Image (cartoon, rainbow, N blue to C red):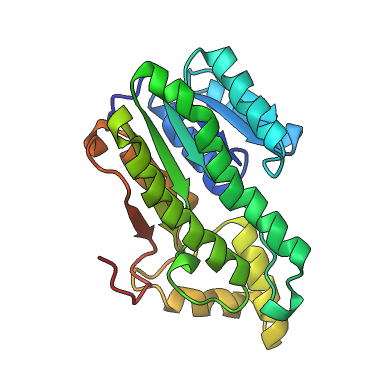
Length: 263
C-alpha cells in the first residue's frame, strides 16, 4: 500500500532500536528520508544503513534527549541536512522496572526528562520548520500504562499519562497551522525493554521468564505479544493523507488487552 509520503523527511527519536527502528524502516519503505537519533553511534549507523538500502537518505545523529542542547542540535542538524521537517516521531524512552519504593528522585527526573520533556522540547523545536512549510505531522509514542496501573512501571504510567495530555493540548495549539498531533499507546510489545520487565517479574515471582511471557499473552485477546511493526503501522497511518483531519487522538495498539472504555 502506498501512503503518498515520497520524499518527506521524518525525525525519529530513539530510532535505532525496537519501536523506533520499526517506525524508521516503515517510513523509509514509503520513500521518507529519515533523521534518527540515539545515544549509541554503532546501532544508529547500522539502522541508517538499513534505511539507505531502501533507497532513501538517512542521517544518524548521536543525541542524549534528556539534554535540551542535544535536542536543539539534533533538530538543527537534521533540518539543515534535509532542508525540511515534515514528520516528528517522538519515541525515545527509558525506564526502570521496579516498584514504587525503589524509584528514586533521580529515576523520576530522568524518565520525565527522557520522555515527557523530550517530547515537548522536540515538538517546540520542529514547530518553526513545520509552520514555515505549511504543515506537518507529530506522532507521540506513549504506552498503555497511561490508562492502567502497573506496579513495576509506576514512572511509565505517570509519564505516559502526561504524553497523552500533551498530545491533546499541543494538537489544539497547532491545528490552525495544518499540523496534526496524535499518540499511539503500545500494549505489551516484544522489545528489549519489555523483556527486561519480564526478567524482573520472573525474579520477583520465582518463576522462569517463559511463564511470565505466557501469563502476559494470556491477557491479550488476540493471543500474541504486540510487535514493533504493529506500532509502526499505526504511526504510518497518522503520518499519511488518510489521517489529514485526525488530530489530538490517542489510540491503543494492544491486541484488545485493555479493559477501560475511552471516549
